[in-house]
Length: 88
Image 1 (cartoon, rainbow, N blue to C red):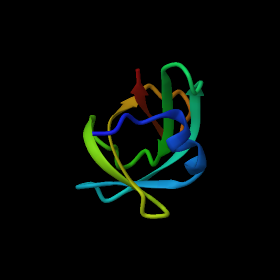
Image 2: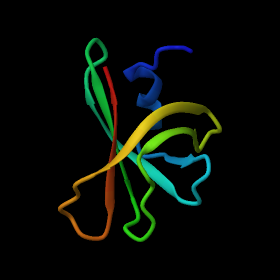
Image 3: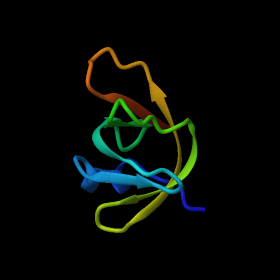
Image 4: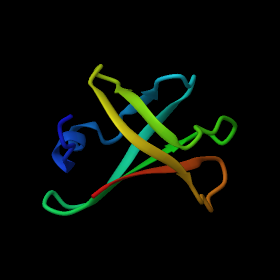
């Protein structure tokens, strides 16, 4: 398994990710952290259908696939649910 890097996700900011076994999609809104240190992917999605925490295969709009662990996080804004995937 290849180590995923910040650079792997940079072209996909603002694109939709679909997660295997779940009917919805999440948008990658931000990458926090730098290329040479740990980073976090921040996603947002609908409030009505929350993606359960877990390890998923995600397919981005252009059909590239990634495997990573994602979890819903506290979201103070109404009208959306935020998620994070942390890479050390």
